[in-house]
Image (tube, rainbow, N blue to C red):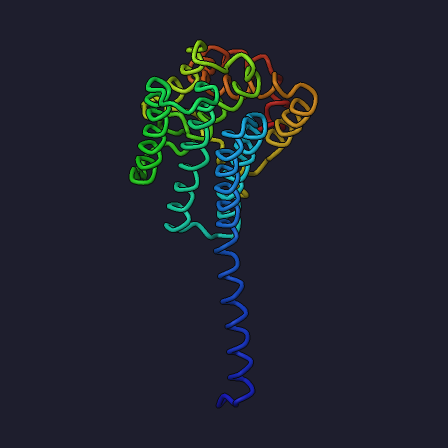
Length: 266
């Protein structure tokens, strides 16, 4: 059948609509990445104004947006090299610069003169975060276990800083509080080690078959943050930081859970 002008126009319109939808889907994850970067940049600004609690909240929102952009990209099938690079740049702002400058603002106690010890320590954090993100982008091993990260992920490292500041901000201000630098150095160095950390990307994947365990964990975390936010934040952050040591020790306790409960939560 010979195409008429009408059928040609209809097909052109349909193709344009499909192309517009594809472009919209491809940009949707980038909007979450942009929100991640915006929260990280906002955390830097408010940290130097002394609003340390608000800075922690903004970095926490960056973590949520960072998890969401990957899940949305997989959901709509918009995983792309551009998205990977854009996500890493946003992570460097939110989980590289923001936690380091937040810690430096606390340690320098609002003074303007150069503080060499705090400057070097916080730069080590930024350098480790940049190296960790670059290594993640360039290391492609098809045989690697996708359930684990090599090195502490930058959002997890940032979580240690924000949980510590959220819980102990009043005790962390001033140069005499040198232990605050350990909150920066330890997770910073762990980002570039070969220690394996569990990846939870499979739990938030749209292909996960039984999300009951994720739902139960999300409810517990939400209730904990609403009732005892300081304790919940510290347990989550430091628990994940120490998980390579704690998991082998506590894994035998999983045998005490009834098989039916394990099946439901799996």
